[in-house]
Length: 84
Image (cartoon, rainbow, N blue to C red):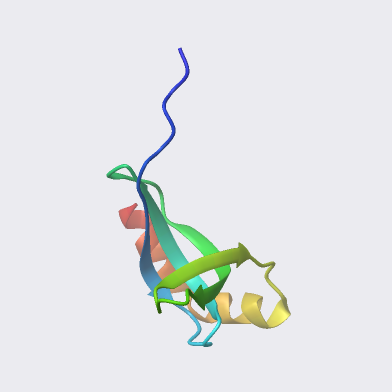
């Protein structure tokens, strides 16, 4: 029997590495129907709906500058991953 589709998706930001207005780069955890997933490193476009509600958009690849930023914050990222 097929599993029913998920009903609620919550993106929990655990660490922000950039403060760009239309881009989020950091560590997040997705909570699906109340069940928390593992933390992941994510670089994602962000936008607002016409009503002003923040929404997450497309994932983006990591470039050299992103890699350097990640290395600078390695201890913080590892701490989050260790906690799960």
